[in-house]
Length: 351
Ligand SMILES: *[C@@H]1O[C@H](CO)[C@@H](O)[C@H](O)[C@H]1NC(C)=O
Ligand SMILES: *[C@@H]1O[C@H](CO)[C@@H](O)[C@H](O)[C@H]1NC(C)=O
Ligand SMILES: *[C@@H]1O[C@H](CO)[C@@H](O)[C@H](O)[C@H]1NC(C)=O
Ligand SMILES: *[C@@H]1O[C@H](CO)[C@@H](O)[C@H](O)[C@H]1NC(C)=O
Ligand SMILES: *[C@@H]1O[C@H](CO)[C@@H](O)[C@H](O)[C@H]1NC(C)=O
Ligand SMILES: *[C@@H]1O[C@H](CO)[C@@H](O)[C@H](O)[C@H]1NC(C)=O
Ligand SMILES: *[C@@H]1O[C@H](CO)[C@@H](O)[C@H](O)[C@H]1NC(C)=O
Ligand SMILES: *[C@@H]1O[C@H](CO)[C@@H](O)[C@H](O)[C@H]1NC(C)=O
Image (cartoon, rainbow, N blue to C red; front, side, top):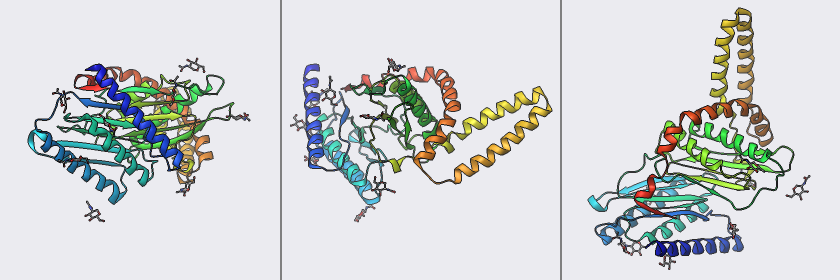
């Protein structure tokens, strides 16, 4: 059964890659259907015909959601006892509406190959689709979280690439749960080379901020295993992270992360104020003046328009705080990280 599964997966891969290459050759914009993972539940539905019509109905609703309001995220369900279907679909926000729908078409065709399985998922670079018999919308890190590393090493000559990846993903980890829509794309130059790191982070919109944070913790830890590979991804049920030394989104799709990292620096300033108070009134006054200046300055920065040069410069200053905080946060979440590992394996055959 395992070898049969593997043969099937091989075939999935071949089809995906051929389709992808074909699309690239023809010059269609990139719908991101480079498949990363597929999983089929080992349990079958009770009645295939009921289930298939429910599945079709649900996928139809998802497609309508995507087309009518150019959404990048949709959940739909069709409830009928043992053949109920809960479906979730998400595109990365940098995808155009057309590419997003193309990715959905590929995913909804691909997922049929799980036949009568009562749950399945397929994950591409550009999107993912998952369905279950029961409500899974609140899942964060329960599934088989893992990293997918590219197989080529970056041309950046030293460890600066690693540290740039770590600081950029660290900032994304902190910022993304605080961003409305739970998506962020950003770019950072690798000092001493002409390379940049491009990265995104995304959570599903059916979890809350704390859930997104918990998922980001795990994803960050996983994707950190990839450098010095030129690209890497982290997959989980509630979130996705990806970095590359080549652009996979447009420069004007990046956002300024600084406003979303601010809470970190202000809490550090508070710590500073407490120490200052103990040391003496004079120091306290200095800190208050400092805070005032910082406040004025940050207001100014907030008012400034989005721009990549500005973005990159600002972020360099912000990195130190958030990265330090992140390290201690990772320690605190160690137990949660552990809980996140391997849940998918019981019920699923995963590529
Ligand atoms: C589920 O159905 C498929 C075909 O529809 C079959 O190949 C597979 O063995 C079934 N699995 C179980 C656990 O019954
Ligand atoms: C569901 O859709 C698939 C593919 O689009 C089709 O082959 C199948 O006949 C449909 N099944 C039902 C019950 O509507
Ligand atoms: C989607 O758009 C079509 C045609 O524009 C319309 O008939 C349909 O009711 C819309 N569906 C939703 C859910 O808004
Ligand atoms: C599903 O698998 C069948 C063979 O089992 C294959 O012919 C078909 O192309 C596959 N469909 C997709 C979308 O990969
Ligand atoms: C590296 O990945 C590419 C496609 O991403 C593939 O064609 C190639 O065979 C892989 N090389 C190795 C050594 O795995
Ligand atoms: C950082 O990069 C160097 C060489 O580029 C590599 O040997 C090392 O394993 C990397 N370290 C980490 C923690 O990724
Ligand atoms: C920039 O990188 C390219 C290869 O990616 C290399 O050919 C070129 O010499 C580099 N330029 C500088 C100034 O390092
Ligand atoms: C972003 O840049 C692309 C070209 O790279 C351009 O086609 C597009 O209109 C720009 N979008 C915005 C919102 O400026």
